[in-house]
Image (cartoon, rainbow, N blue to C red; front, side, top):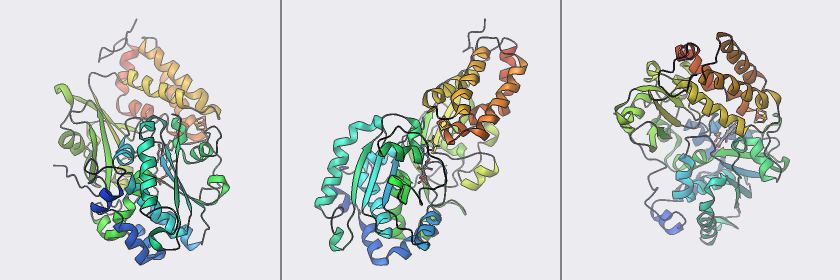
Length: 426
Ligand SMILES: Cc1cc2nc3c(=O)[nH]c(=O)nc-3n(C[C@H](O)[C@H](O)[C@H](O)COP(=O)(O)O)c2cc1C
Ligand code: SF4
């Protein structure tokens, strides 16, 4: 039976999101107060102990990143928050941004306090534009209450937060493309290295994390890294916001401890496959995430266990796909998304997605050939190895997994059969 543990989502829906009074009454800013008592070195130590991994997709240990900056005495200039949330099926950052943004801002403020940073930016997905007035009010109210702005809580620490709006490009979630976009250029990824801790926003060292990552910081500082870590597994500390979507009964965002098996997410929290249908496969981590069938459903949601099973958590989106769907049709949708979102900077991604789509389209019309499968493998491996950024590198994850676990459906299409009855095979 899957457990819900609300460390960061507990006040969502219960307080007025832009009200500092509500936030404080619900326990808000206890983390920042504690941070100022224990000081930068201890904060970094607690974050390290918490085993918090970045919640934006890559899963890099946050404590390790901050410790490196702290030990090297890096002069960070900016705190940037990634709220682009363009991964299909992912809407967990929206929960925080829309229902408890002061928690995120408190987390960013603690990060700024460690390094004496004065300026912070939250980059928000363009489609969330309806949150603009509320987010601006939350900042204004926090400044008035002296939790942001000059001499925060009577100290000599000053920190401002600005909100910047995306314009609907998925690639702007990639950290360097996001910075290009804040700087006013079109969102295209930069060469790495230099890494953001060396040259980030406006070429200055930058602390860069996802909305959910920052939102965990107040709890970790207030309660200690060990307590936070105790909710998770040996390697993955704390909780994760997961988003259930697709052919599942109870869609929504759930906060669950690391270690929860994927099966429990689908059948216990999700209530199972909708309309009494049979599960075909799930996709974990959004459109760039892995697809897998029943056999891997008992894998615990934990970075190591997932890696051991050749899976990745990604953003925490879990798409449930039932047997009324056709694998080829599904992959056409995914590939169409990546064609649309490719920034066009490099050839493998710009051309590769289109070539793959053409092949899949032939399959869906009953014109696929056995040698097309070799081409699908060749193209996806090539894109994986040679694409400039993570978008092109991960665009064919679903394709490769579907070929691995559901190859027979490709063969059936060559023979003129679509078992789901979705494709119009002529
Ligand atoms: C194409 C692409 C899209 C991405 N989209 C997001 C996003 O919407 N939100 C996010 O936090 N990270 C996204 N990332 C990952 C970021 O580049 C970065 O790793 C992350 O924001 C770092 O923060 P974290 O360590 O707290 O996860 C994306 C990466 C790629 C390659
Ligand atoms: S992989 Fe795609 S999104 Fe990334 S730089 Fe190349 S064309 Fe742009």
